[in-house]
Image 1 (cartoon, helix red, strand yellow):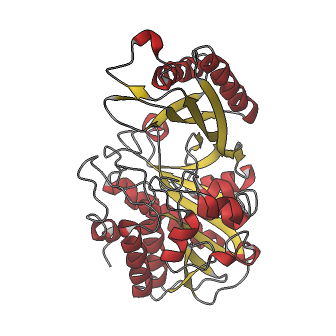
Image 2 (tube, rainbow, N blue to C red; image 1 turned 30 degrees about the vertical axis):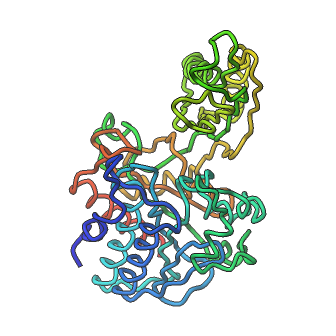
Length: 396
């Protein structure tokens, strides 16, 4: 089995000709193909694969049991995402386990590779949904009622993929099997570029959440309605987008983004009746993030005019501080690699509140992620696999 060969095997799955990069969304064609690929690839090295009650895939080396060492990541992507965000962690886990097997290593604890469902939240709007369901952070009722852009509910999509929706929700049995979770991930940022290191251990994840801002006005004819007669929610939304940027700049260390907008009914010659704007906000502390969103709301209200406005929280993840003792232990085991925080959310961050968890980053020489420009050099990817293998040897 060629090291990193898994990335080549899936290189054509989910390519997005319009956006560039990849669009791989939960239980749609590309994601289903990737899930089938993972089952075949894991089976090829003698692992036994199962799907848990929330759609996450587990590949076991040996007999499943408690106190397992679990590694892995996700296979889904943002629209037009890069090739490494998620898949690098899955491929590296497969390669690290295969290297241990070939060396004759015999683990003293159960080992599993875990592939989470809907990490990016690109189809149903809630990130890390597989891990949030497993831990109970998101309830089954909430998840099953989520809808995608086509109006398909999470429940309908799950049923079409062969899942039994009656069993979704907190999975204590799966959590009880995890003694330690380690997620390898391409770095999403410039930390390792500036530190001149191919790998690092994560110390923390910034607080972050998603909100929907809805502006309601009066739909009308673009040619027959004078400018003075209009109640145009698109104008209010445009003011809001500028306000988001201004509020984030005014809050040092904060990040706020509008990456999605929907106008109803969406005609070129129609003044929209409603406009939805989705906000992603992040900061170094929970309080700072909440204050940022409050400031955004206040600024937005100043430009609403005669339209109405509502702000709804769709997901929230507070600051995650990974166990510092575990982080230092792992950093030392890898020869003193850096320990640094990240502004990107991950399944490891969700699991950290329930089980011992850690993250291993691989350098991204572009510093760009969630984009086709995302990249990692082969030498750095190999360093990541070797680091993951080292950590597994230390804890197995």
